[in-house]
Image (cartoon, rainbow, N blue to C red; front, side):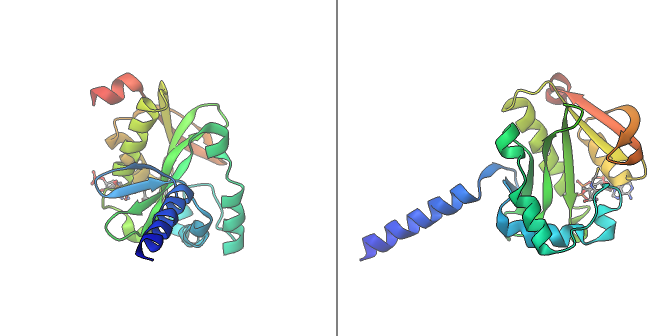
Amino acid sequence: MLKKLWKALKIERLMKSKLLKTIMETERLTLREFDDSDSIHMYQLNADPDVIRYTGDPAFVSVEEAEAFLKNYEDYRKNGFGRWAVILKATGEFLGFCGLKFNELELVDLGFRFSKKHWNQGYATESARACLEYGFRKLDLEEIIGRAAKENTASIRVLEKLGMRYWKDAPCKGIPNSAYYRIGKGDFFKT
Ligand SMILES: CC(C)(COP(=O)(O)OP(=O)(O)OC[C@H]1O[C@@H](n2cnc3c(N)ncnc32)[C@H](O)[C@@H]1OP(=O)(O)O)[C@@H](O)C(=O)NCCC(=O)NCCS
């Protein structure tokens, strides 16, 4: 009986870890693939006008729309990477997302977004640094870019803390005044 229960538990855990695929861990954070169960979190994240102010994204109109977005999110299958859910290890809380994206310029960009109550605790820097390392080590990328509206000074600060260098001003996702940053593999491992 106990043996059966143990086996069932192991299978359940295995299925869960398969469903919620962990990509990497940092000291405080787990980065994992998005799951359907994140729809409520994504809805709540984008429902805060301060969070989406500089992102060029609208809020989801409903949890169902967020669910549809996650169901149709194809980056993992198409490119083998994407934006990942960031979970606080200590509590299991969904903080936001961070990750890499093969974008419309055919470049790989770094992106991050966190709920306001979690800002200024170093989570963007910690998760983004892990994503850069993943991009250069595991994916063997040569360069990763970062883009932010020029007014988004917190985001630009994070890009600079990661050792990214200013590249140019150009439009991005409907934001005419975006600052482009970039970092090459060699420079990342020097910092
Ligand atoms: C940008 C964002 C991801 C940063 O996340 P975070 O976890 O707070 O970032 P960190 O704590 O790692 O670092 C933030 C840095 O910016 C600084 N900062 C915070 N607000 C700032 C502001 N208004 N102006 C300048 N710097 C600011 C912090 O002091 C810190 O720098 P420090 O370590 O030198 O003190 C977060 O603010 C966010 O989710 N914003 C909304 C979504 C968004 O704009 N995403 C980026 C789109 S390009």
